[in-house]
Length: 86
Image (cartoon, rainbow, N blue to C red; front, side):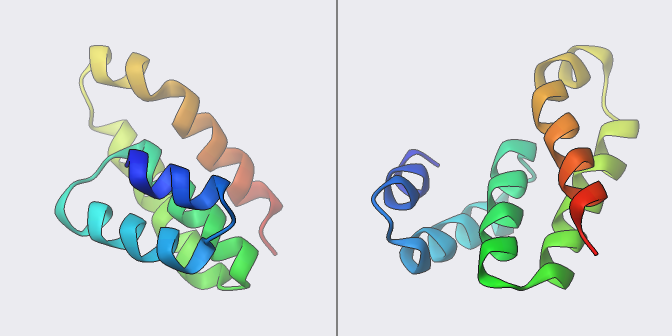
């Protein structure tokens, strides 16, 4: 995830997108999914972004309390991005 964040900060969005996709294909990290969705939105792929964001919100409903507390920042961002999508 650090590699994808670094690539995104350097402006290499295509490389960052590939790394985020690889990370989210193996794990369901809300942080990774929200940042991947943000890249999808910047590329104009709102359908893929909506899918990732809805997954974050849906997974949060079934997570234990300690995990919900830990991921609350990313769930809030996911909900905010979902509201902004057309």
